[in-house]
Length: 99
Image (cartoon, rainbow, N blue to C red; front, side, top):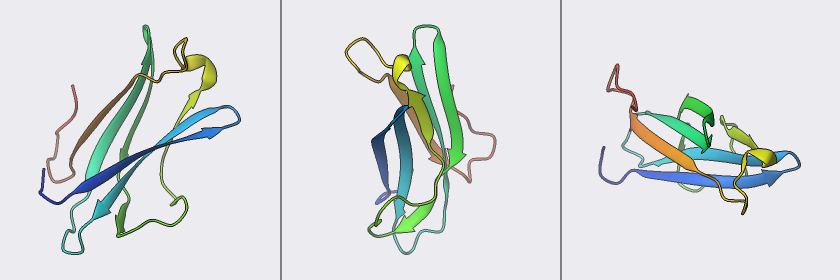
């Protein structure tokens, strides 16, 4: 992973569940993209989103048009907690994946 790279993991609440978004805030000199894998688990069930980060230089105003993972309320734990795994890797690492 490069130095000076910042990823934001955001969670919002909608009427049917939580949305989770990964945003890549890139330095002006960086041209690389990153792949990510989000997995929300509950017991033996899981929800998964595999996508490419959208690069945004500097501050992001409002919600950018990106992929997101929608996690329905019944999928949350008894206390409303969210069990989430996040894996991020460079898109230049062809064939790389989270295991």
